[in-house]
Image 1 (cartoon, helix red, strand yellow):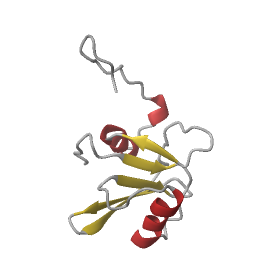
Image 2 (tube, rainbow, N blue to C red):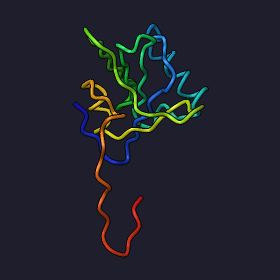
Image 3 (cartoon, one colour):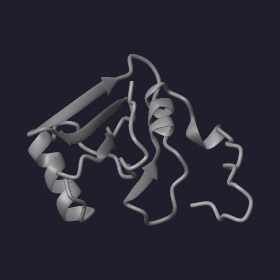
Length: 121
């Protein structure tokens, strides 16, 4: 669903968000609460109070794009979050798994390989 370059960040709200918020309401949250640039092209994801709906907001070529997914059964499983954190950063693979209903807390990744003599980022 998402083919994103590594430079694009995915920022997921850790708190549950009122899904009645429109693009403008979500923009205000991104700017005021998180201090993020809504025009950066990064993706900002929000989960409903019930956990059965997700909205993803991004800026693209002169306008905002808002994607919305509602589960007919079950809830989205959020990744582990540090206490007090307002957001957690995901990569495109983690976002795709979240949207597919995969519990990110149960997924184990192999460490990324780096060439000898270089440190990983």
